[in-house]
Length: 552
Image (cartoon, rainbow, N blue to C red):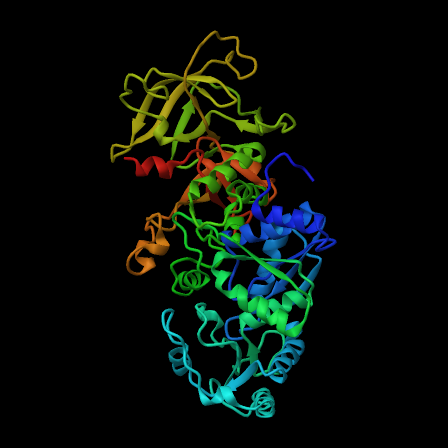
């Protein structure tokens, strides 16, 4: 175990627990509820739980907290497993809270038999009123005084389906004056008639999260149960259940959840974006979901790097989304293949180029010494960017214009001789001459130019569609903004270029390859892309254009 970097507070706890013999090895768990797709906030928890197990020679369970059948689906289970594996982690055991429904039911009976749980007929509104307020103690009711025998009978009848949804609940008998509202006779079970994604209609009562959580940890012998800060008030109930039942003493520890600028981390709100059509799907590349980021072209290495950089803390803070983009950009710069794509084309004709065509070598990645080169076809008719030509060049303009010279990337130096416009006054065709002794890598021309342009041979060009993404929201702190969060959706979060031209190399490139389109940004082939219609998503810009725009 490397000691090069200082330990965070959870690593210090684990180090001490192992040194003091409190546990021989550690077992953590990642316990998502399968009611939506995982987002970048979950990635932090995944990296933490699996990372701790790796660092300390332990293991991690993947446990689905599937105690609410009305919101959970097998689709979400499958997506969660795919996301965890894509991030580079493997679990030692795949578990479900529903695996323990029989055991949890028996635990509830034990609590009733001990006289510390009772069946309550009160409505949710009545229970909320009876709990009191943070400054006023709650009040008991007659149901609290039921005998153990009556509670056992009623709880069995709840299980058998004798009562309607909401007619009765099982509550812990702890006290009604605790300053912690979560400890004022909390609910343990409720009646809910809904088909469960795994157990079907076997059960019509389901344990509450606070009851299933600690007991499931204990059943699995989890040594370090790591939650986010909002679970601090729940910890006393977690410990109460374990103590009352005399089961494995799992321990809960809390860390600050991930909050990011221009992003929401609520699965409920993310679901709204999907169901109301503000985005195309859970894996829309603008979404902060792991599947959305994967589709956009983020790499698992960059997300793990991001989670490592932000660290683990006990205090809430908000992380700038640009840091995640920085991590993505840093990794892609090392691995992305370079390609030339023209997005707003104008024709360039080289009048003195006599050959039909030739193949030129161009490096795949200057950052990779073993990246090799690819062959790019060159001819006398090329596409270049319209922005790379100016009719009346300004003093410090180093691209193409009348009588100006530039180098074509990996090719030759050319000089603009003249140009033609169409009826609308737009530049239609540019005519230039080339210097045959100025070939890249073998230049003996003695010419010096300051500008280099990317290009694509017109007769070899492959049509591509580009989706250029920006922030989904236009304000930094979306979660705390006034009004409906959907009012802050960025209307320019997606810009699609339907006619662009790329190198023919794309036809042989693997779908999973990452690319840097020269001078454009980093791109990744979309899941809907085909050989007949190549579609690329912009993963991230070459530089942080958003931050620059906000400073104007």
